[in-house]
Length: 310
Image (cartoon, rainbow, N blue to C red; front, side):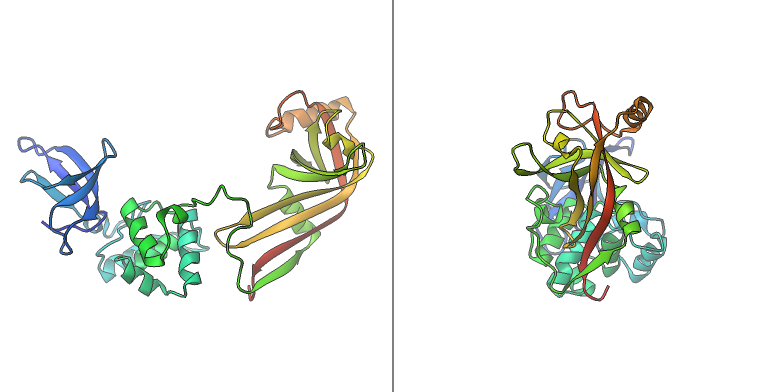
């Protein structure tokens, strides 16, 4: 009996041949793939050391899935060249749509100047599977992540986005960044994809303040709901700045949009009711916030940061 990491150990009933228990092999104790194995059981999610008996056999993922379309767990070890080609053909064509793990793998690999072939060799998987993982949404096994993290000199937690709760901007900067100005139409498009932005106002005591608000884009206006005695309410009757941005820590890139205009209260009853009906969420700050404020941008500018040459 020989196995690879990620293969499945199946224990069958000797009387009926039905599966009694199965689990993923997440640890090998011999380089040739012979027992014993560390197995993560599907019914308990616990990992135990297993010496397979006569009622056990190995289900190799590459045998189960060769020549078929691949879902979230395509084969990651021991594929033949034909199987790698089948996987590439089965993957959706067109613009790649990687998942978060795939993007982080690709970024770490590129930062270290490693080719896919070298990385795949270090991680004991086929280059075809690594290409699939980097370019398509996938859910690799724990064993696969362990091998990739070791090959890239990082951790499983980092590949899974363990730093997602860190303050934005602590990721690695691009080696050769380029700032691109956004035209007003693209700024409007980016504004309409968000639900939380920051408004900069001068408070009643003359001090500046920047506060987050839930917002909607209605026509050419940015609208948000607040309370009359709140800090955002200080925007009414004044020229204010409203900013929305997005940072992609995995790819070290992002964009920001800044709208500047005069804020006013929405007072027409039908307009207030229409805004309340179309609101995607109630204000995160809670409480009674029934005053709608509208900002009609006089200027709309934005920038995008990206690698040079793109």
